[in-house]
Image (cartoon, rainbow, N blue to C red; front, side, top):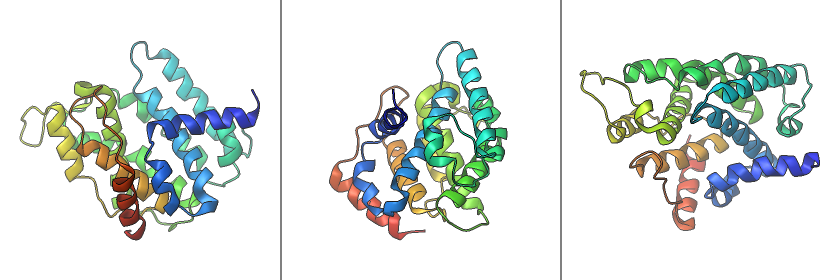
Length: 239
């Protein structure tokens, strides 16, 4: 398999999970389109390792490998096909690598919503800092963006793991269920986050998917092209 074919397989895998992207991508600057999909495909690799079913050891080994790969990117060396696109950007890859163990801890059921957001915060901050370089946004990353990215990670965990992702207690010490946790995530997920256009678009698609969430494993039908286009237009204009 050539590097080009291998790269396309990773990009196409992410696009298959987010079919609406082909509609909203029109709002992304042309120079950023492949970069955005490569970056999101990388994050999907991390998501798959977080939401592993069964024996976690292979996924843990995969995350350890990715940690070394990202540290090599900080020295401008890469082995993975996604690195051919991403590594030339002098983003804080080393700092991102240092937060990957958070993904292992996210497999555990958090005690309460505040603990869940606090656990994911270092990873969300690292992701935001990488995106500020990749997409040329503000050097100082704001808390709404970190909160938004954190909520998206927690939503992805819920959609993949169901009850295992739901905090044991809410603020009132009442048991939460999947639907209740999804609603609380939506309430704590800033719509205006100050992120770059690719982040705002993906965040909006993820929020839309969570709004239609019923239970883990049941999936959500993609938005119609018209609804996706309308959502993309609004998010591209909003910061």
